[in-house]
Image 1 (spheres, rainbow, N blue to C red):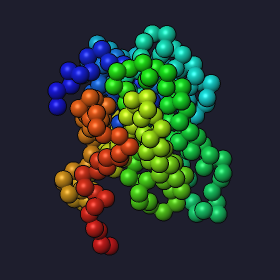
Image 2: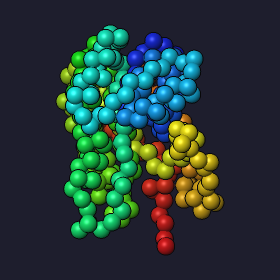
Image 3: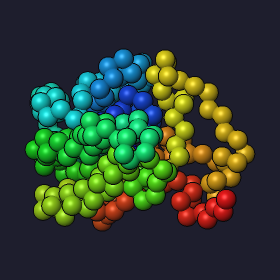
Image 4: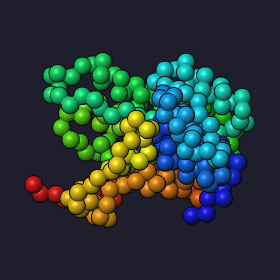
Length: 258
C-alpha cells in the first residue's frame, strides 16, 4: 500500500526497542511518521535509535506495568506532540515459567499479566486525551496465537494474550464514540534474531521441518507484522474495528498429526 498517509503522523509504540516492536517502528518511520519508541530496556532503546538513525524517531524509557511511569511517558509525549495518531501496545514479556501448575509462583504469573495486559490498559487510559485530538486515531494491540492455542505450561502468557484479545473488542466498543478504532494482530512464529540488541542477537537457523509447519513455507519476520500494522492504523482501515488479524503463515489452521 501507499504509506504517504503517515507523513507527520505521530505513532507511539511500546516494547519497541527489539523484535516485532522495532520492526514496526522502522516501518512507520520510513513511511514518514514521527515514531516514539518506548521500552523498559534503555540499552536496547539506544541501540534501536542507532538502527533508525536519520529517521524521525525518538526513545523514551518506560515500564508499562508501572502507572506512574506510563503517566510520565504520556506527559512527555504531550509536551512535544499535539496529538497521537496511533498507539501500538506491543510491550510484552514471555512466560519464564515452564513447570507444572502446582509449582507456579503467583509472583511470576502477576509479572506477566502486569506487563502484557495491565500495561496496554494503562497506556490506552493515559494516551486517550492525545488520541482524542487526532483526526483518525487508532489503537493496535499485539497479541499472539497463544491467545487461541497453547503449549503445555504457558499459563500466564496465554492468559495475558487471551485477555488482551478481549480487551481489544471491549475498547473498540467503548471508544468508538470518540472516533477511535481498536484492533489487534495475533502473530504466530516470528523470527526476531536479527532484531535484537547486540548482546542478544543471533543468526536465525530454521530447519526444513520448521518451514513446512507453515503453509507459506517459511517462518515469519517482523516486517510481516509491520505491513499489517501500517494498514490497520491508517485511514484505509477506517471501517475496521474490534477485530483481530492472525498473521502466522497459516500455521494455526494446518492440521498436524504426530
